[in-house]
Amino acid sequence: MNTNAGHDEANPLASLDEWENDLLQRYPDPETIAFSKSASEYRNYDAPARDSVREFYRLNHTYQTYNFVQKKRQEFLKFDKREMSVWDAFKFLNELVDDSDPDTDLDQFQHLLQTAEAIRADGHPDWMVMAGLFHDMGKVLCLFGEPQWAVVGDTFPVGCAYSDKIVYPEFFVANPDYENEAYNTQFGVYAPGCGLRNVTMSWGHDEYVYNMMKDYLPEQALYMLRYHSFYAWHREGAYDYLLDDHDRDMLKWVKLFNPYDLYSKSPVAPDWNVLRPYYEGLVEKYLPSTLKF
Image 1: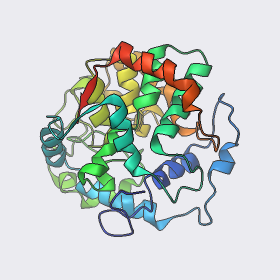
Image 2: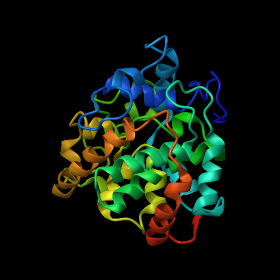
Image 3: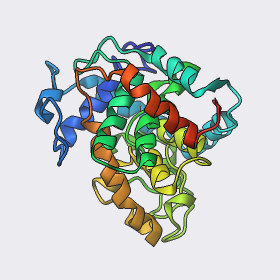
Image 4: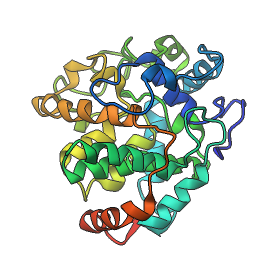
């Protein structure tokens, strides 16, 4: 995968999918979705305890400060880097072709198609199919030179105390916000029950693609995009004190989406020639002819 990767300080993972395989070790239950491999077969690495994942989270937890996130939001949410057609955007994303993932030889677009097709096969609304098709589009941040720890990884609120339900919470002691009295209390810069829409999340592909899609998809789909990596919330039940009733109502949609993201990989490539008319019509229904990055 061309992610400026290698085992250096900025990019400790061999591929972005190494993080996703770590998720399968933490959350191995595929719930009700049946695919061609069992959950255990997805975890096909010789060394299940990988130092690279720990190093990834050390970097992520050290540098994802409140001020860092604000700077990245200012830098990238102007969407002034490139403008492309939707289908050229998928070709651009495919520059992240992964040569090291043991689960699949498929490119990024084919994985997104698999996710979308699994959602469609179960009869969910077409806007949820769109969420599946675009949920990893934010990984293009790597192609703009961003390090892995600022693109993928479990997301979490910044600007308040870190929950011990976040993976590897011990690494937060190196984060400058950990000792900052403005940010290290339970509520930090937020008010009780303020709602997630008023909470600043750590920076990465979730927040980026949410902002890209926020004018085009229903709110249920936007919650799926924005919070699908917020495992401390939707898997561990943390941060309830920041939620409002609307967040609690939307949680069921995030939980519905998440297994399709984690367990939709299959070695069989989707037949784009067959699927193309449906997806071209779907994209035309929801999105403009070009997207800004």
